[in-house]
Length: 124
Image (cartoon, rainbow, N blue to C red; front, side, top):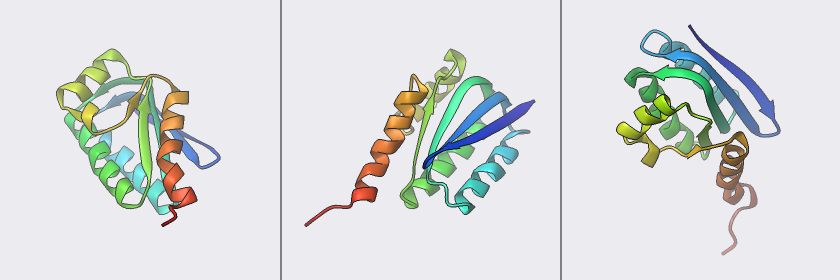
């Protein structure tokens, strides 16, 4: 069984993943992420402490979403990964593509850091 628990704090949406993210459950996550984009969410922290397993289908959902989010000037970071889940990200070299932090606080700061330039703009 797979579940996504969402909460919002300011401009940050936190997603807590619970269970197994595989070919059966990944379409539901994809729909949830699409709904967040449609609602205008651009800053996401994905908390993985309760994520027991992730398959290539789950990884694909995150990679596709991350690309779309970047095009829309958004930012996403992961945190609190179980060692087995981190290992899958590492083997697939997703650790080079997606920000992975130890704690929720670090991931939230990373997402806010990514928000900083767009919020304040640049002066020429």
